[in-house]
Length: 262
Image (cartoon, rainbow, N blue to C red; front, side, top):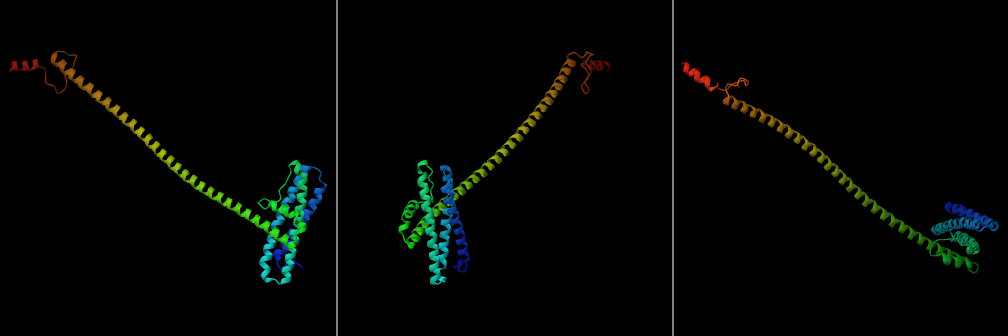
């Protein structure tokens, strides 16, 4: 029965799973011809990635089947369950092959893990017992393994979210510190500008004081000179080398002569 008549998504998932099964079959055939241990290890890693992808697609297939059970008749549901069991059984056969080749490479420390997470040891035991298990038991084991993988994924998501939250908090703290440093730098610039302006003002005041001192000293010298001239004129009025200062009274002798004349 063509699954596209039931669900386009199921048909697409089945096509992808079958493509991976063909790639796994060709890959293990190629692995048998490889003699070099390192090349075998690389080939096993590639096959492991394909099996991991196949496992994820089978789980998606199982979820889609469960979501459609209520709308399908009994024969369709039975057919879909048979397809799912066949996929799980075929995947387990490739898991067994992978374990076989991994054991052969163990002496060279080239062991490759199939699936990450806590369900790996149980998965390997289930592979050894696969030939003695019914299809329903295989399906249950496969579902259990996929549930464990989902739990591991959820734990990984939780760790990622916690890491993102820590990164967000750290980013906010760094931004606050950056803003504070910017304010400090701005304040330092203002202080530097004020100090520069104050220094310039002090220099201008110093120049003004120096100028005022020079003027005062010059005036002081003028006053001293005038006083010296007056004293000399009083002491020696007949000294012709010193001119009379305008506004001063004439010498006392001249005043006496004028008095006698009258």
